[in-house]
Amino acid sequence: MSKVMIVGANGQLGNELQRLLNEQGIAFDALTKKELDVTNLDAVKAKVAELQPVVLYDCAAYTAVDKAEDEGKALNWLVNVDGTKNLAQVAAEQDVKLVYVSTDYIFDGTNKGEYLEDDPANPKNEYGRAKWAGEEAVRHSGADYYIVRTSWVFGEFGHNFVFTMQNLAKTHDKLTVVNDQFGRPTWTRTLAEFMVHLVKTEAASGTYQLSNDNTATWYDFAKEILKNTDVKVVPVTSEQFPQKACRPRHSVMNLSKAKKTGFIISDWKSAVAKLLSE
Image (tube, rainbow, N blue to C red; front, side, top):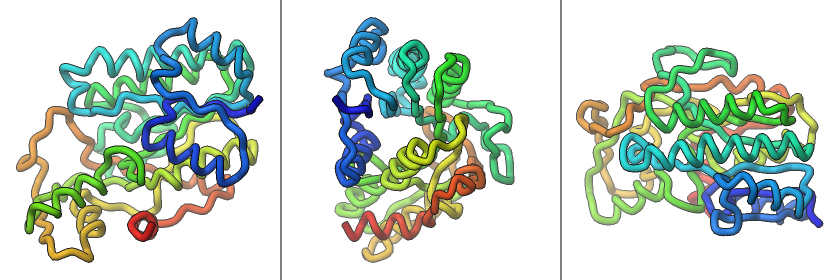
């Protein structure tokens, strides 16, 4: 019987985490949404009691940020809040360490510097509100936990900005990308490695922030992804690219706490290069 349990195993982070654990020879039970509905408390209780994990990696999330504003609003709350509450409650009851993934969207983006872990949350969209409520549920559950906030996630699995840009580049010779939103891209590999690192090193419980190092705009990110193509990337303002959900303009998170655990963080351009080379 394995000591590690992954929920939301078929998402981009869940898949990356499985690959990493396989490489490290760590046995795990990986459960997709079909195999475990985290919004069903009884099902969560039964499955954790059956598998008896020591660590539970929560990679289950509703991430359709714009849909969360209207048609997906109820599902966003159901998965990201109620589902998280269920996992946290059961982790507390059955003495399981919980690793929960949150987002830079809990911040309003008005800070011109770097957000620290204990800076006030002020989410400006429904997704951010739900993820903040999920954080609070974990913090008040009584469980032993790590909350890992991340941002601008990309990787080999699932839908993300890298694949969107590559696909658009196949049919366009010019792309317009916003250049007034600042943040830090995060490779799923780096994020998965950090989550495992926290558990392995028995780092202090609490909230951490993890992305790849250095700051970018979405325009910078796109330019790097397409730098070896003939596609022209043109910067535009957020007003020229309206979206349903408000995005924070400056959600750069401080990484000092993560670095103090001994984890080495590569810069985002190196991470993009490694992904594309693979």
